[in-house]
Image (cartoon, rainbow, N blue to C red; front, top):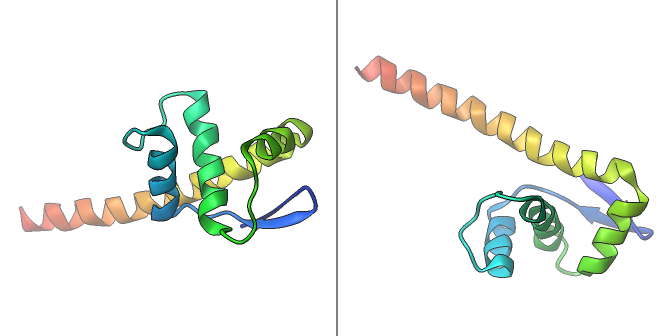
Amino acid sequence: MKFTINEKEYTVKYTIRALFIFERITGKSFGINSLLDNYLFFYSMILANNPDNPLSWDEFIDALDNDKTLLKQLSKVVEDYQKQDNIFDVSDDNSKEKKS
């Protein structure tokens, strides 16, 4: 998904690289346990997919404050990924049931 922040276009995807960046920033294993974790993960997704187009943390937070739809759009990226991931989990459960 593409987003425009401060007149620059950013690609945002849920990737393993974003998880690594989150862990590097926070110094802990990946997990969303607070509002800050949630925002840091959104920021990590931007950093992971736009290495040539840096965005500072302050610019990111300012953009969220100024555009109330941005948070919803970022949440949708994660939601869509989780829905897709759940599809794969269901098929894995079905294959386990068939083996039993």
